[in-house]
Length: 256
Image 1 (cartoon, rainbow, N blue to C red):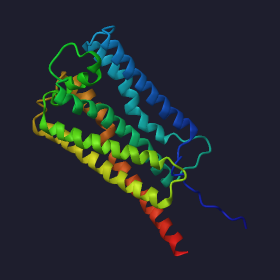
Image 2 (image 1 turned 60 degrees about the vertical axis):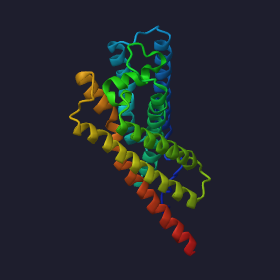
Image 3 (image 1 turned 120 degrees about the vertical axis):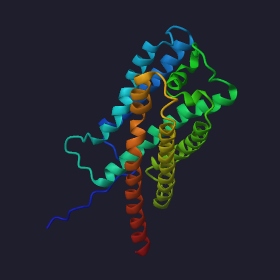
Image 4 (image 1 turned 180 degrees about the vertical axis):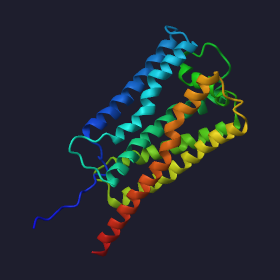
């Protein structure tokens, strides 16, 4: 009889090349759009108008909202188990959410004591953050709830990003990978709780702080945040699956 080998999950490189190219390409595209708009509006080449707001958010917002679906696209002949998908979802989501926390929340957090978010029609290089403040005015009004969420989001985002850089190492010892995954599980749980507070606090206020009418509410406040509502519970479960598997593996190894 021919022995059948169990499939070994590569916890540091669980993705197929075509998915990695899409992840990387989308990240570079969105970053390029951010930089282009920041420079163009900062130099007054492009006006900080509502039309630019809509077009720009459609261009870089829709790819970000659709990107998580790429995880479902298997290559021809690719056989992925539950652990493979769990590892890929975790390694995909960590930089996805960390970029939001560090790139968006950090600027709002720094700008509050420096007075960057005073009302203006000419935001200059601050347009990227200013335009979201038009949809959720709590970010530019010194709201204490949002300030607290910014502190939690930034510190947690930096923490899980550091863990991500470690999880990408193929040579990471088993025990170290388990510890990093525990930190990720706690961090994503904190961010999920913060997201719940973010939405529920505004629900309690009757959405009084949401501007730009239906565009601000449905596309910016709801649409652009859908991945951060839907994915965290899945990522927490995916992280649990990896911790459970690796802990059992470590126990069996120590028993030998």
